[in-house]
Length: 78
Length: 450
Image 1 (spheres, rainbow over the protein chains, first blue to last red):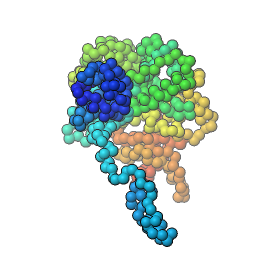
Image 2: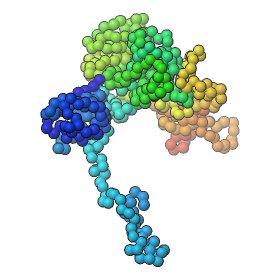
Image 3: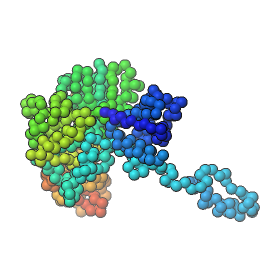
Image 4: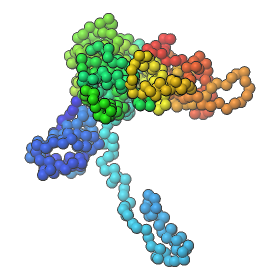
């Protein structure tokens, strides 16, 4: 079972970039892109859905709390 | 120059070199500097990897409930933190484990088994595949039934054990140990991709899809009925190793008669998102029966009481399936399977083999510590002080509240030949402890009713 987390806002890319090893800058990862990638210490399916930008981060349910805590930490650092 | 890159030794070495060569330190010069030029704090390296984020802890649907209700959480494999026991206010760990263990044997308990590894096996050659990776045969397993299997590696050593269910004509669901779920999936995928690409078999890891709550104890059936289980669960209609789709507490579920504790057990599997609802509903349904949440330390105590072996504890890198008393999982007429050649070789080579036996200390309050060495007991008729070699070690020990005495399992060279005799256990303080008897673990036999 998976948990889907929606992340949006002007600094969403900066938040995710701290934990993923792929290039998610607009020119490499525009809306409509998707990739399975490492996210912090787990893995996730990353989809960029719009220009704002909005990302859908899909993780295994057992890692949901860890990913939420990590996103909270990564957002707080900006 | 080592890990300080010459920061501490450089000057001294230059000084010594200049004395030895009769030149000035300036002519000797320094080594080539490399980063880091200045000390780097550990914090800079660790970054945000501290506190709760240092390990990506996984959670089951009931983790929050355990945190709120006195669960003593610890890592129990695959990054899951599970309760070892659930202490009531003012209760010590031993008191909690004893209360939980008594509840399972005399009333009813329940635990969260969600971390168990689950692999879906589909395809026309599923039976051929299972026959090759397990020591036993899978062709005759009907839909709606399940069976215990042991998996060996090429060397004939224990890899994993677990129950596999036949859910439909072409659909099997394999359970693996929690800590080895990823390892077993890799092992099986490697076999399919590299060794047997001709087999029509599809593996899907589904560990995160399903939550497992297990209700166990002599009153488990009453709790299942109180939770409005909508199938006939009477002993005649729902037998040991049956598995059925049904609804429990208005939640779509699959219920199986399998056990880890040796008591009447119902393993309820629901979609992960309904796991907490099921847990809460069972707490309500079991209230009149004083249903007791049970931690994994208690489960270990309960399986030790029954002398059920754990592949990771009683089996080391040397023990084979016969050594741990699981020879019954190898049918005589079985064709080839992974590990058969090496296991057969062990049998032909003969002993001594590290066999698993039970221990009953003479001092019923002495709990044999895990890993304690065992030597042969001295012949009381002999006055000679002879050096005695280690013949085995304790694999797990507990004080059993159900047996009202200490018990243990041990791996001993030719252990079964010692059954009924005494052996000597060396404790940390090098005091010899007499062990009154060894008892062979018997399948399904309850130790404390023997």
